[in-house]
Image 1 (tube, rainbow, N blue to C red):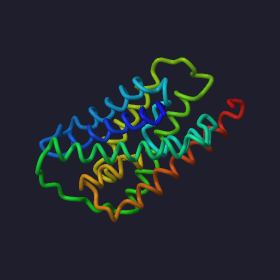
Image 2: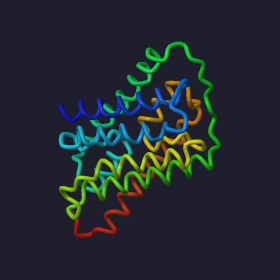
Image 3: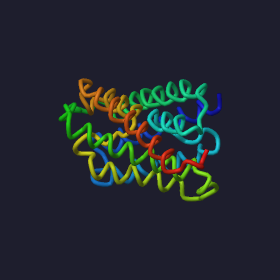
Length: 208
């Protein structure tokens, strides 16, 4: 149960931070820095308990890679989605009655952007947080957080820069992205996690 609580808490603070720094008055050009930083610190805070996934696509990738029990996958994902939704309502309470215009994404660029950077995120997670060759390193949280930071700067204006189905549900609940675009995140994010796990296993056949 503690693993699921940690996953809920970490995802909550990730989505909460996204809402607070993106919805005006927000953090402007520094928003990705705040988002990458909160992910980094939450991974350091909860990684020793749950692995610090905070992302259903990462959980899927870690499961395919063989470092997450299949019995834990539903609990992790439920906790992550729940944390994202609760965070969206917390943003409403903190920000108050702020006018937010939902963006309708352009499918092809958004699909490609979300797939590529979710792949990058999951590939980094698998290599720095699950590989026996990097076991015990002190930089795993920084590497993962900075992957999201870079992705947010690179394609945030194209796809919203979620790279995470729980984040996608959170920002759609906040009204930042139109609900009609949810399928883009679900397909691209989960596919990115799957391909990253396949790539990791192919490149590291002896790392079981």
